[in-house]
Picture 1 (tube, rainbow, N blue to C red):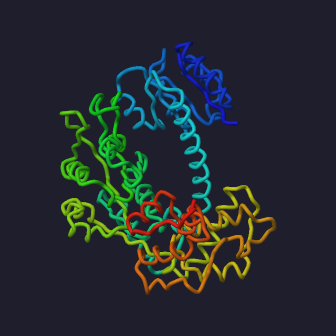
Picture 2 (picture 1 turned 180 degrees about the horizontal axis):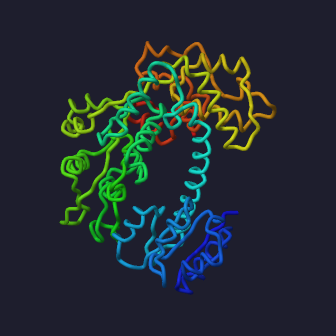
Picture 3 (picture 1 turned 60 degrees about the horizontal axis):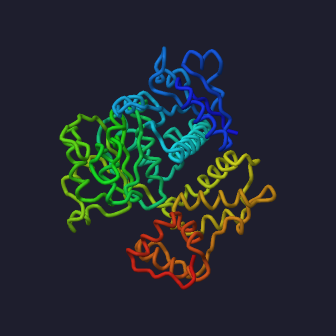
Length: 442
């Protein structure tokens, strides 16, 4: 059971939040001040601290440094988004403004606990990987990956923008994190935004923030991710999906270090390093006038190209074994082994979903395995004679042929997992490429 410590001086609020969390199966302790919390409890025994920003005695933000490694959710009843953002810059995990909706609070808590759990797992894996793979978990010794690692080492100490290119599932976010963690901004925020996952009407609000009343539904002032990333690194994944209007505003940030919230006339100075990634051809998009050329050249100061997994033949076996080791550790399973047949199948498969698909296949196998070995059938890899060679078809043609070949006997969820993408991305690519779903597909 997750343990949560609430530090709030208002008894009514403290009691209401405690009851809400206990009804949702959390173990909860409370305190009226930072001093009482430190005298009565060990913050390191909790998975989350929920702290009012203004308390008698020491401010709530002191818990950020006093509870190292424990996420702190800041509560504030004051119309001071700036103070909440300052708290996040100090290391707070997030903030929520009073009066808050109970469902909203529960969703934020669930997300922060999941992120904390994932972060601890990642840290444990990093320590295992550090000696063998010095570039923050980058696994591979083929010439293409050695080139990528060399480029990461050279660009990380600089403040240059980096454009990371590669097919879906090749590890573009991992490269971005490696660059951030080896930069002078490593102690500052690393903020990730998937541009394809945000509705077009909300993209600018998400990036730049908005004032209260800026548009219908904007009931509170909200900081954008650029403001939150101030001093650190902003990683924009799938930047090719960014609308033209947002591209122009982003260019202003890169050129002048200035941004303006939606609905505000006030310019704010920001200092961010921008890393961007895409699997789309931005040069072609520039020619088609769907991507600004001036932004493209701003992004393309340094360009890192990630190879597809099928082009990393000498890495596939070592990568598979390392992913298996990581997965067994994450799932608290004894270390399993891959049979010779499974290894041959892994080497023969085309891997359209790249490393993400390989990771999903291994995770599935570990979950389903009864013994100490992983056989081919547990991987769920379907090798058939209709599979095209990577050299014969473009990625889009391969995607289309793969879906048309397998959709009659696979659900949408199974197709997406095989391709190493989400159901939403599968649906979007169907629309883009004009691939109809078969009757009754789910």
